[in-house]
Image (cartoon, rainbow, N blue to C red; front, side, top):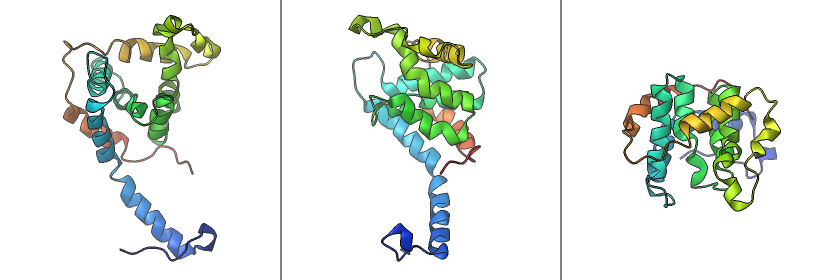
Length: 185
C-alpha cells in the first residue's frame, strides 16, 4: 500500500497532500455504508426501552417519511440518535456533526439541539429544568426543533408501530450523503 513519506505534517509535500486528498475522497464514498452499519449496531445498544435504539430510529424516519418531510429530514430523523453508542452525553451534537456537510443549516440545528429540547419530557423527574430549551425561544428554528421532538422522537418507542425496514432508507442515505452541500475543514 502506498503511503506518504512524512512523519510530521509540516514536512509533507504538495504531491503527498494531493495523494491524501484522493485517498480521503475514496474513503468518503463509503460513508453511507458505514452509517448503515452503525445504525444496525444500534440494535444492540443500551436497553430499557420497549424497542431497540435501531427500531426507535426506524420509527423516527418512518414518521418523517409518512409526514412528507424532505429526504434530508427523513435521513436526519434516521440518524438523530446515532451518537447514543459513542457519545451518550452529547449524542445529538455527534449526529449533527455527521449530518452537517450534507443537510441544510436548519436540519443541522434541529438535530444538534434535539437532545436539549427532549429534556422537556423528563427533566423534571430529576430536578432539572424541563424548560431549558427556552433559552432558544427567539431562535428561528426553536419551534421546528420542538416539532421534531414531538413528531419524530418522543413518540417513537412503540413496539406495535410498523416502521419501514432499514433497507428502505438506504437509497435515501446514499443520495443525501452523495455530495456535501457545505465544505468544512
